[in-house]
Structures are given as structure tokens and as C-alpha cells.
Length: 425
Ligand SMILES: [Ca+2]
Image (tube, rainbow, N blue to C red):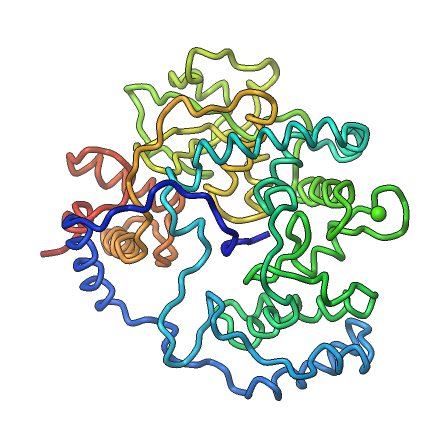
């Protein structure tokens, strides 16, 4: 699952030139207008008392013994350096990397190329098991391998945190602490079932194992491959691959359907058609003049499948028609960049996959500017429901529609220019 702290081989850092300084000054100004939600503590109990308050539930609903509980919490201290906490006196922390890194960096072709080479090797090594996984779950091997590659670089990366400490901290004072309450209890249940604490190394968001599952997912999506009675997501590659496939299937994966296709938007259309609400059949898209890049043919049998337009960098990079399987990947990690990474890595493992359209270097996605664009669009009656400073299909589409109806260049991308245009003064 979420693995924002995972190291990423990024291209050269953005240089801090005068344009950036101006942007930063603008951002500070914008940020000043939006009082942070997280400068006040929402925690009512001290950490130790909060953890102890979970004991009755751990015992009654999760079958945890007092001995396991005591051992797990002995000497436990919260880790206030984690991202996404709401801690008194602490400034806002950076959230998931998917929401801050530029698309051109996140979808770095060289890194994708290296991963795909390793992935092809693993496809040979685990051919027999992958045959069975495809047949059982209907998820194609390249997709399953791509999840493994994205999450832990095929096991080369071990997350740095102790899962119990991370989950206890997030459940106590995380910005999304409701979500982590049960995850902490499921982690205790894993200990109760004999998973060694030392194995339970987690991302800052509590995901563990070769394919990064949250503790609750160990109880809903795992698959024991080989029938030794234990789905070992820490040390068994076949178990981890089968479990990733099962998780995708549980999230609606459709057999024999691609995740999506890079396309060319016709002159008569633009990026402001983006988003799941604008889904049409492939037949309809093709009728509107959408075509695959490089004149590639459409495969047989997809005419009546639904797809929606998705341009993760607005008009500054490739656009895709994506299917319900793209949505299933997003259930693994709710981010268009994440799902595009997985889909593209799968394409490359199969031997293709280079983006035909370049990702232009548009810099990291600036939370303050995105937030100002969302506020401005909402004030003008656009259907923006969440002002969160994170960019997704909805913000890109509405930005594009505003640009279109105001005679601006339609790039569906938040910018300083767009903020000024949206400003009431
Ligand atoms: Ca097993």
C-alpha cells in the first residue's frame, strides 16, 4: 500500500532560481490565507493511556492475549517525526510522495526501464507460479510483478519503521487516525498469530511485506501459495505475488482487460474531458476521434468496455484512456501517478511501454497553489467538493473547463497564472 517514504531515484533536483523564489513567495502568501487544520492537537489522552484504552477491544474483538499486548507496548513511544500527523506546535508534514513529486520525476523512464528488466527476469524465475496466479485470479503476471516492483523494488527495499510504533502513533495522533485504529489492532493480531516483531518493518503509513499490505489486508487479501498454511508476505515471493493478485481481484479486476492506453486527443477535444464521470465506451471515444499514439491498432473486443480520459500532468504530458482495471490499481494506492506507474511498468515488462509523449518538466505539485485553484473554482460554482491541495482528475478537469470558457490556453494544470485569473480582484 502507501509507501511514500520509499526512496526514489529521481532526476536532477530542481534548481532554485528566481522564478522559483517568486513562486515560493507567492506560496507563502497563499498559505497565510489558509489557517492550517493541524496546528492544534486533537488528542484527548496521553499516548500511554490511549494505548491502554485499546486493550478491551484488542482482547474481545481481535483475540489478543495480555502477554502479547504487554510485550508489544513495553517501552513504546510515539514517533512524532512521521508524516501526516496532527501534533501541537508541529508544522504540516509532507504527505504521500504521489502528491508532491512532479509527474516527470515520479514516472522516470530510466527507473521504470531498470525495474522492468528485473521484472522480466522474475517472470522467468516464477513462471510456474505466475501461470497458476493468472489462472486463479485472472490478473496478468506483468501487473502483479509491477505492483511488486513499485512497492519494494522487488524486495530490494525494506521499509524503515517498526510497524507497531508507526501504527500506534498514527492511531493516536495521525491526521487520519480513525483509519489507523483498527490497523494497530490488526498488527497486534499478527503478533498474536506468531509473526515476529522484527519482520514487521513498515512504511510511515504502516504497510508491510514484499507487496506492502496494511495489517487488515493480511486478513482479507492474502493467499497462501504452496499450501504450507501461511501466507508469508515477508519472505515468500510467490505468496506475495498471489496476494497482490487476490487484492486486485477483490477490488474488481477484470480478466483480459488492459489498464489503459496512451492516446492522442483530437483537435476537437481537450484535457477538460478528464475523469471517471466522463466515462464512455471505447467505441464512443474512437468515434470522437481519439486514437492510440503511433497509430497503434486497438485490440479486438474492447469496443463496449468503459474508459475515461486521464491526463496526470494535464496537457504537459501523456494522456490515457483508462479502464476499470486502472480503478482497481488505484484501490491499492489512491493516486493517478501510482496507478500509471504500475500500468506502465507492466507494459514495459511485456516488452513495450515507452511513453510516446514526453513528460514536460513542470516541477513538483505545489499544495498551496492547488489549494488556491480549488478555492477559486469552488467560489465560481465549479463542482469542487474537497479543498485538499492535492491534484486529481476533478481539479484538472474543472481547471481546464474554466480555462476553456475564459479564453485561456487549456492545459488543465494549476498555475500561478490560473490563481490570478481566478482571483476576485
Ligand atoms: Ca505459503
